[in-house]
Amino acid sequence: MTFRSLISILSLSLASFSALSFQLPASMLSMNRELALSPAKSALLHQETGPLRTRILDQYQKWKGTHYQWGGTTHRGVDCSALMQHLFSDAAHLNLPRTTGEQIHRGVKVAQYRLKAGDLVFFQTGPDRRHVGVYIGNSQFIHASRSQGVTVSTLTDDYWQAHYITARRVTDRSV
Image (cartoon, rainbow, N blue to C red):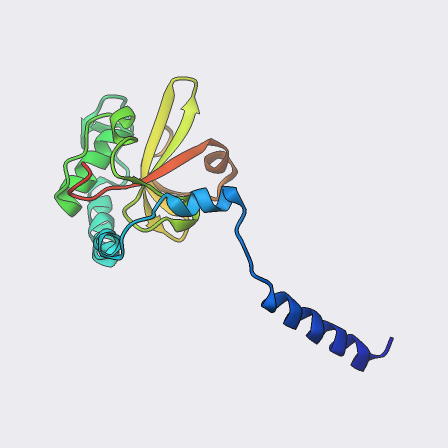
């Protein structure tokens, strides 16, 4: 087969592919429905992503290195859900519930591939244990780690990928 013949076949293949009507599988459609919002409501959810990220990072600097303490709510020791309460209260003036079990039901469910800065990310870290952090972009999230205290970790890390369960986007109307 000549190079010219190969190019002709490739061109015809691409042309016929683009003419096909493409439909998403049912599993992909359900992921798209997770954020099936009106354009106005969707814009409301996304309008503060840039400034919100900056405010969350500013608050992170105040908490960075604070050691983890289950049930802790202060700079002497904080757990993951209390850290989220503080970050959202100070950065976004949103009052989240106290526990991860309550926080996981707030807001709108978001597919992992649609995460925006400010989304809560949840993990199942044990049979009866959940963990929460806040997404800050570039596959990173802030959380209170048992071993490192308040820190930034990467969602693509094998441990976090294996334990990831869901994400939620919270607004003043959803808390």
